[in-house]
Amino acid sequence: MKSIVVANWKMNPATFREAKKLFEAERKAAEKARGASVIIAPPAIFLRELSKMYRGSKVAFGVQNAHFEAGGAHTGEISLTQAKDARAKYVIVGHAERRAEGETDDDARKKVASALSLKMTPILCVGESSRTDDGEQFEVVREQLRAGLADVAASSPSRVLLVYEPLWTIGKATAMAPREMHQMAIFIRKCVVESHGEAGLRHAGAGSGLAQAGRNMKILYGGSVDEKNASAMLRDGDVHGFLVGRASVDSKAFAALLQSLEHA
Ligand code: PGA
Image (cartoon, rainbow, N blue to C red; front, side):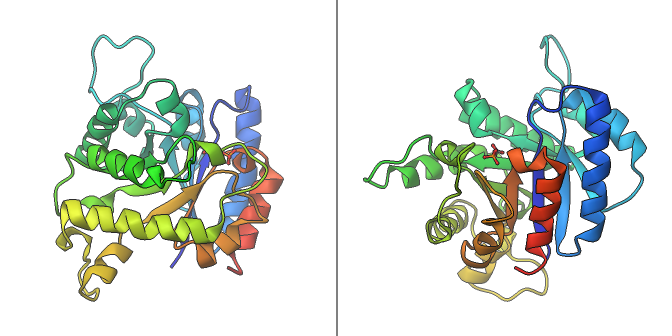
């Protein structure tokens, strides 16, 4: 199965000229990478121009955030409908940096539901902000999943991409250990099967049972992913791919990351 790599450019680069250059380089790298599907989430202001330039199918576009309302008095916001009109198919919801700025679980719930109703794919991020020894992260993640997926029909949880991206692993020198991610992936699947049942996670033709149902839920890892740690995470972390920050705004690092996944 192809891995999924989401390039979260965050508030970079500074100019459209640079964005175009970065996009061109990443598009080329994505076209070479047979093992990965690439989703690029540039700053919204660059989205339409970039998507206009590209007619291929190897790269899909996303936005880093959007408002759940279709329109109205929301100064400074963009709507999911507007994002879709600029060819975004994906929307990142509940990123740790946005949660830190005040995005709530309830916002995440509304954004996930609106995105699905527009036939876009929400990329719902969950994760604790700091790690303690008492296993508190599991409760945090359970609650974020419960709230974020509350309006998702029992038939549809596999239409949401889930990202485990604890704040304490973002922007660091190393990623989390694959073994720890593996444990969290099992927990996430268990939570979703508990809240939504198995049926919506079972695809036609797939086997039956809890393990198979959980497997159809796509879970990504985010936090300091690069070409040095990604393949081990893909092998041993029980993930389908990655949400990438810094390594996605450096075209060489991004190409090396995609390359590393070819042999994972
Ligand atoms: P990072 O950011 O890869 O720079 O750690 C990840 C993210 O926040 O999406």
